[in-house]
Length: 203
Image (cartoon, rainbow, N blue to C red; front, side, top):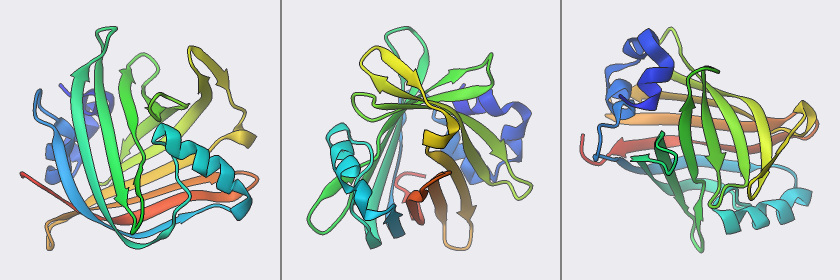
């Protein structure tokens, strides 16, 4: 059973059927898709050095634009500690650069959250809460966050966090998944946002 079915419980079956299929992730069969991000935007220019540094860890990036080719691969695996994990590889193909926004997720069933380690190696940790909207959309929101330095994890107060909101749904008429990701900060405002569509390669 995928970590997403476990965390959502009975809610999982209220997802749109194609979202259920996408998040089931049977063993040995990754979810692969390609598409286009209609819009990618970021925060203020003074954050440019931080976003450039993030590219070294396949985390955040400074490029912005419209109609950017996109691909995603979600792969299930067993971690060194024996827990079920899902690796997320998200690639944004800008005209002169290929940028990544990668993560490794696992389940903390006792806390009712998905553990999300962002970057390779991990640079940032966020607890994620998963919900199903009344329309059958997948909704994701961030909770506690930590800055990661090797084996050390430093808790971040709310004022320093990147607050995540995700809405993903399926458009039957066009046979595409639609995604909208927004990361904001209480002081700075918008930090990172992308919105677009993708189509599964082998559904």
